[in-house]
Image (cartoon, rainbow, N blue to C red; front, side, top):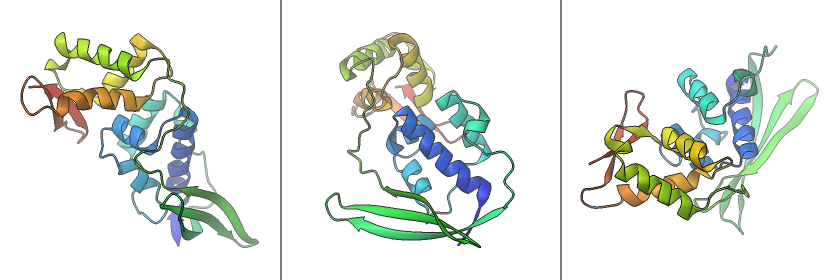
Length: 203
């Protein structure tokens, strides 16, 4: 199947970057402000979803990196012909994919990977514990920080600034979930901003 070489390359550069940072697909989805399965579905090579320009710029903020880390320079081939082999790991019950790029001289293996289940974790050594992140977010809640809508990335960056780096995004997501999971005020509710990203605001 033919795919845009630039978009294909960007998708898997972002995947490599998030893995280097120690972020799961669900954690990157949280930082982007989207559904938990957004990144997993985008990284599925059978999907037509791609990161648009606005998301690419947002990814630069998330990773604090130059555009060149996420997008290639000039690529001579505007399209790649790729072959996708799908499998299933009976032990983990996860889908697996093997991607190959078809060239005149033959088939070139590009990447083999499994989908990440909801419980998947990467060995990122966070400088702060879940409890410490929760205490910090509790303080933000008490002190009026959420009187204005806040994105997950804004909260995460502030936690990093105060608690240190590296920090597990899931700790921040869990801390916010404690407030969004409440049935009545005072609590946090989730809305969409003008960029269709999830924001958290006190009710």
